[in-house]
Image 1 (spheres, rainbow, N blue to C red):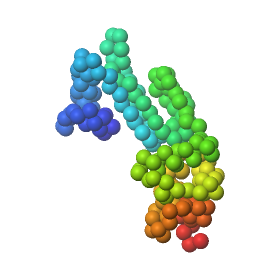
Image 2 (cartoon, helix red, strand yellow):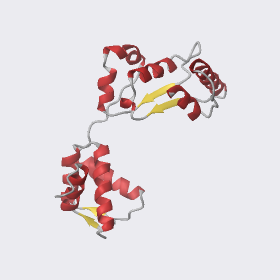
Image 3 (cartoon, one colour):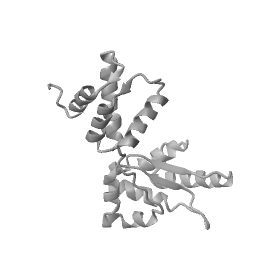
Image 4 (cartoon, rainbow, N blue to C red):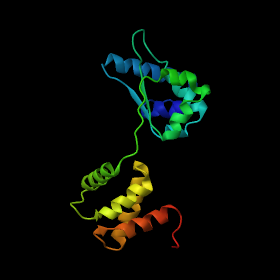
Length: 187
């Protein structure tokens, strides 16, 4: 199913084809892309959720190549569990094909502050709503600098601010958002 999903994302009609024919269709598509002077990239987000069998399918796709180049660049993105999974001896063949690894470290307090402000600016906020310094500290303290947790806390706090018509989101609002995320909404 993963190989079919990848083919479909590339715009290929692979209905009714078996896995081997689907891989062949992907290979032909990638060769055509090379002839057109285009690079093809497969980006798999949340790759830590892939089973070992699916990761093996990804490895097999990395074998698609001509005499002088790979036809498909593969980017696996995921949580730290992905790194642990890739270090498994059973995935050594996949690990050997990885040419670049990058691990995003948790954001520090200053980076979180800028990250939140950037996200607010991109969404169209013009200084309203805004998080107080103590609120930003609490977000950092709770999230440990993990952007996914920062987003989750901010989402809950922004929703609470909207419902309560608050422009300033403080320490208590963030605390309530954290409690809700933790399933402790009765407090």
